[in-house]
Amino acid sequence: MAAEKQQQPEDREQAIEAVDVLCLLRLKDQIKQQFLENSAVADAGKAADSHHAVKGKSVQIGIEDCKKDIENEKASFWSKTLALQRLMLETLRDIVMLSQAVVVYQQQTREKEQKVADIKKQRLLLKEVGRQKLMQIHDMMNKLKEEQATREVKMMEEMHAAYQKERKITSVIQNVLQCIIIGSRVNWAEDPSLKAVVLQLEKKV
Image (cartoon, rainbow, N blue to C red; front, side):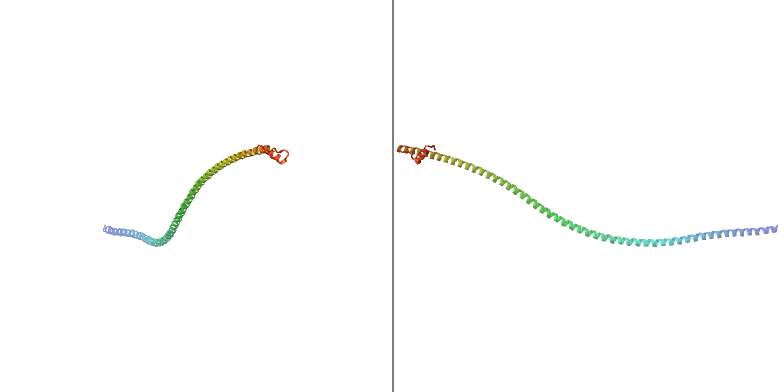
């Protein structure tokens, strides 16, 4: 019995030692696992830091490139703006010159239109004056014709009156000569010349 009682504490100690060893082994495994996990995390962190560093450097390079592009775009924009301003100034100058030319041409056109209107007025005036002159000439011609006709009628009447007067005188002279020849008792039939005169006196005038 005493031997069994002495054996029990020893077995208990051995059991406790066995439990402790198992705990230590599990703890060791846990620590090893945690170490591996921490190592993996650390390695991942280093890789991430390296990636972030590379990425940061790339971003910085991209930012610098963007700044350069922006500066280039600014320079190109200002250059194009200056060129556009020069073009606008030249265009404005051309517009001003064209406007002045248009004003001059419009003034010349108005002057020419005024001249044409004046010429038309003068032509109408001359046409009216010519018409009046033609009417005057026509009236004068009619008047001259009437006067000439009156003169001709008067002249014919005067000529007719003179003719009638001369005829009467001639008739009287014929009668007187006939009376003289008859009264002289000359044989006019035997004298050819006297006969011709007597025969002529017998004709009616």
